[in-house]
Length: 408
Image (tube, rainbow, N blue to C red; front, side):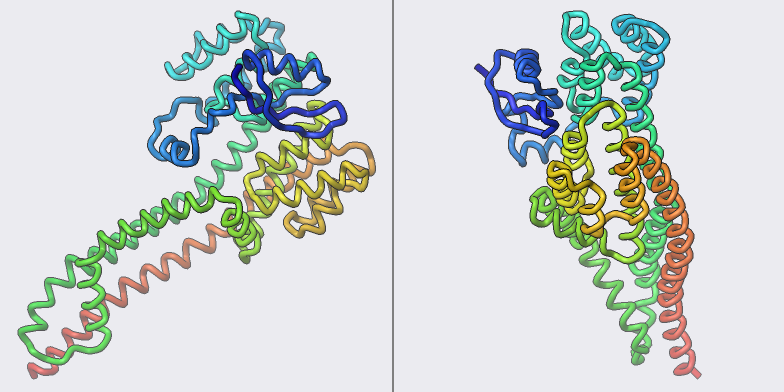
């Protein structure tokens, strides 16, 4: 009998996980439900395939599932269809018929086939982890269990769209600085490897002692010409090694803590972290997930090991009835504004709505912070790149002037 790895919310609200043997994934889910638990995730125990196999899939595998934008669009359309009174089978058929890409139609068709065979929607979604993450499946399962699938999908669509908007704003803000850096590096490399060598024979024939800046620039050009490709290859290897090292708990925790402590960038990272934490927590609570179970899910999807440790400490505090806000404030990782709003939500029994309100505030603060950093970063990059190019040209001009002085 195959073994399955599962995660579920127990009857007392605790997030539990472990291994069980069952004939199928659907049987395991039914077994957990009979025990009074709310299943959030179930998958074969041998699906992981080791870190090397996962690295190969992550680095070289083609996209099999849906993108984040596609999942958000599908979720919104499905919520609208269900809220309009359509049954699930007809709504899925509509999505299959109107899918713009064959890959989307294939995934949705598989979901519809599983639902028509009697499988719950959450179990059908769990068969496509490359498209629908654990948080998504867990919320849908909670919505099905409470008979609130349409409102749950609507809230889930809001969550996905907010996350996508925040991610898009970060990516869009980084496009121009990235292009500027790439163009500047290309111009400097071109000067060092193509323009500078044209003057080298002239300087050698003159036999004069070149100024120090010119000798430094010529040496740098010779190094880039001889070793540039090897340095680029070494940097690529180091990046891959670093990515693998960050898969380990120790190095990842150290880097995540460092990122949150860096001046300016760390402040922005904490704003983004607070927006993600509050949005996910508020959405889970609004969908009826108990606080302890919701915090367990948030800790797994928050994406920062230091913040994950702080959330787990807050979970232990919530279990003991001591509240959520105090341990989050003591961690020093979250903005005080979010902590205050969460404390207010606990005092007024409105934790879910206040968490969503905090998410809106910190999403706006993240957007403004990104714009502020980019507005400062672009002039600095222009000055640095312009200074480097001007330095190379000045070193050449200084050598030419020295040669003219000798000729006179």
